[in-house]
Length: 427
Image (cartoon, rainbow, N blue to C red; front, side, top):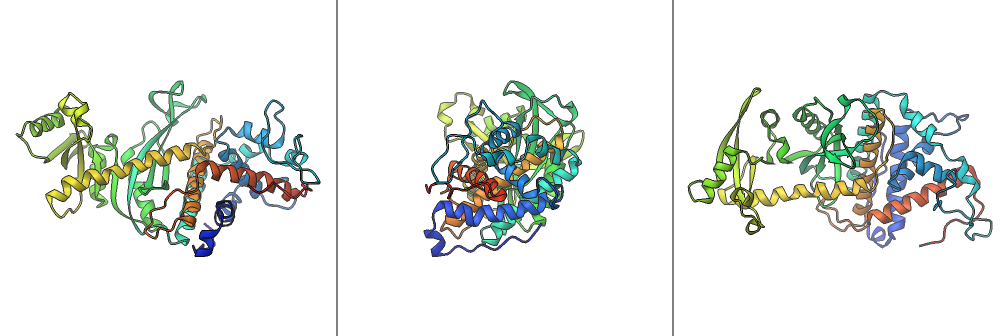
């Protein structure tokens, strides 16, 4: 990972427009970091038709349009006669031209873009995707906005996949988007107001979710973030997961499925025959692990008739000063996990879609989208006055991707010297 230029927030910066923030503090850092990583598999030789900068710009264009590689790049080139191109194009006097700009035809083709990825193994592509995430976090750290200690959250993401791919690289799930075949990933995020992803791994049939979480824990620690607590959904409450969290000495808060034994504890507590904090042993063919559970009444408990629906059960481990701190603090802390859901919606607004049947290619494109979301957080960190590490999303996703796309289209012209006009009007 290359050196990322340090960025410092000052009063002058705070007066800078959001467009200039995205341009100066994000696009240049983002382009430099991603260019260095992508140059590993895109030639920058003087006689090459396209280079790493072209690859990065093409990926940014597709992500900013939240579209498919083929459709967006054809539109950018002006090859799609049925699509209305919305890239900026200007003529000599600076007025807007109604025609498709001639410079757009020199931008990369979809075949060239995907071809740069096809020749690499899945491990290589996954590693380069991880390097992009690390580069984005390093850019946030250079601003002094990446916390050294943080609460992190783990979640799984299912992306409907219609490509005829092998079953062993997919997962079956409830039908979504017209298919039950899913391209699945496990991700780890800093649970702040803005989505910051520290690591992501593909999660296929036969993979151990607990072992993937172990790898994400160790990766997050290697990049210098100490995990204060780990927040996990109910799907992770297994013997193997509890054992790994104990071995790694990670404090955690984890939702628990409402099984019959757990339901009996909840009913006993509801009737006044049990306690809010109880011990539970989870057993399976892989052994047994003990967990401490908190039975907590939901805020909307009155809406539910069934007793077990009125409560949420949370497993936890760590040091808490008192029982009162446990009963009040743990549910509040666990609510921070919902920052993942909000953040992942932002990622879905900047995704690169592809019909490629190569798992490594799809994984790389997914991680590219996650890195881009981190750079969006960097843009917000540049305008947020907070010194606490909590980044308030002032710059919207819509503004961010609009500027990135306009910037990419303008650079395409500048790079080949084909734009004669003064550029887009200021907005």
